[in-house]
Image (cartoon, rainbow, N blue to C red; front, side, top):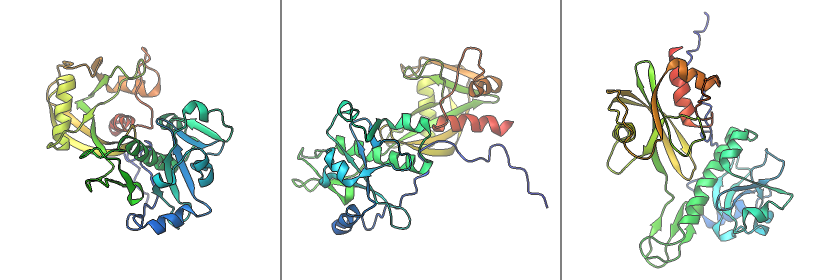
Length: 316
């Protein structure tokens, strides 16, 4: 019997940061002696980061971290080492740490490369698994850099649970890394898709609408609220399609498809500088790079690309 043909929309997602294969050892990482043994392993690597950029070994995309000794030489604090995980066989322990050195100082060194994660993903030199681990590192490093003091009493906190908690020695407060959920939605009206242009995007780029979830609302409610706030469009049925960690700095993008109940666009705040309905033919031009005005959609590393092309492919 011949296997049924694959449906166009049954395809592997191409977006980045979703293939993290690290074994995080959540049960054992609170054991200080076990973490010390992982740090002393001969194949341990440390993902180093400045305030905004990663510090990676130069010229070696098969290695995402520096040797422990080199990381310490560049300013990594052994007391602030974050355990990311290891492979399924217990090898290649991977840690993350921050350095006080500036991007400019580090760029003078021959053995490291200083680069932001978004650019690294666009270059596609690293494996999807390693890019996902780097996303985990970047999000955790950002949280530790910005949560050095207790939000209850203001005292300096200390790293605990190998980086998955910070403890306050003054009031016994415990603080955990945060992930901020965001809805990102392709809103459609029959054969048209609603695409907008925030001012921060590159000239000519149009994308799906998106926004942060607020306390006390469901994903569906957030999609409807954000779409109405940004574009004045009422939304009915909402379905979640996929999700993506987005470490800029620490979001979880909840990808949805929503069906419009109205069609008249009214940009209600300053989040969008343009918003319009685009039919399938025009969206296909944006994807293929043949749009007469040079309009395009975000690159394949993002969930916005997945939502838009998934909608196109499903009907073709």
